[in-house]
Amino acid sequence: MSDKNAHSYWKSNIKIVSSLLVVWFIISFGCGILFVDALDNIRFGGFKLGFWIAQQGAIFVFVILIYIYIHLMDKLDDKYNQRASEESRSDTQEDSP
Image 1 (cartoon, rainbow, N blue to C red):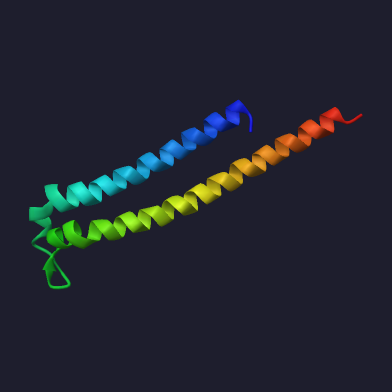
Image 2: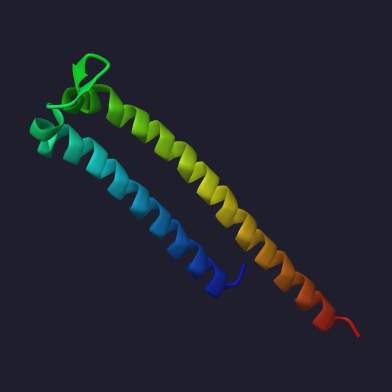
């Protein structure tokens, strides 16, 4: 992989990680602590929603985010592996007489 592709790959990776961390922060800190009073007016499975998110929901979201990260990174890896193989093929074709 060329330096330009490596830089672009890591930039995309950081963008994915950052966006997933923002979602996790909003769910765990925002819904579990900051907005808990407003969410406690809603019931979920017999429990106040703010309490449920703080105790269970944030964990479920975290596990879901792990699977989303795996899926997005597989797509990103495929994209850059395909690009790297195309570059190596074009380099081989340029070198051959």
